[in-house]
Length: 260
Image 1 (cartoon, rainbow, N blue to C red):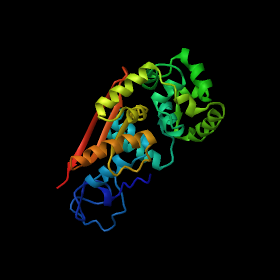
Image 2: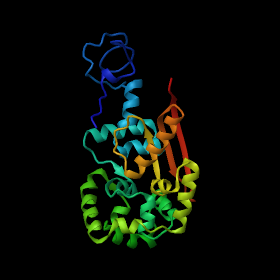
Image 3: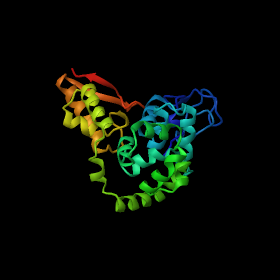
Image 4: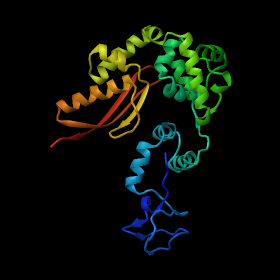
C-alpha cells in the first residue's frame, strides 16, 4: 500500500498549524504544503485507523497478533511501500496463496492440529519437513524463511500442488479431532452443526468492519453467521477475533454497535 508519512496524516497537524518539532516546519508554523514529511511524523487517529485496518495482511496480522510493536509496524509499512522484501511466516503465506488454513493443512498432511500450530509458532520440525515439502510441492528451504519477494514462486508451487492433489476430496476427510472441533464451534458461535463444520476450517481471523481483504468462504460464513445473530438483536457487527488454540479449542470475541 502507499504509505503517506505526510503533514496531511500527521498527529501534529492541528488545523494547518504544526505542533511538532521536526525538520520541515517549526512549532507553530503554518503548514503550507501538507504533502511534505519530516522526522517527527506520527499518524493521526484517522490515519492510524486506516493503516492498522488496511495494511497488507503480512504486516497487519503480525501487529494484530502482537508479534511486532507499533514502531516496527510503521517501519515495515515504510519498507513495503518502498518495495523492500518483508519476512513472512510460510504458513501464513500458504493460507493466503493456497487458500488452506492450518486446519486444512492438518487434514491434508495427516497430522493433528497441534502439530500444525507448533510448526507455525516455532518452525517445522525436521521429521516433518520432507512430508510437508513433498505434499505441498514447496522447497524445503522455504520452511525456514521466505519473504514477500518469494510469493510468485509459491504461486507456482500451488499450481504443482493442485495438479497432484484433489484438494476438495482431501478436505472431506474428517478426523476425530476435527469432528470435536466442529462441535465446539457450534457451541461457541451458536450455529447449526453443518455451518460449524465449514467454520471449523478457520484457524484465525481478526476482522473489522470496512476491512479490504477478501474473506475465504469459511471466514465469510463465520462473519455472516455472527452478523445475522447480531442483526436479530438489533446490533451491527463491528469486529471479530477468532482463533483455535493448540488443543483445538475455539476462542471467539465480537464487538457490536447497538442500532438506535
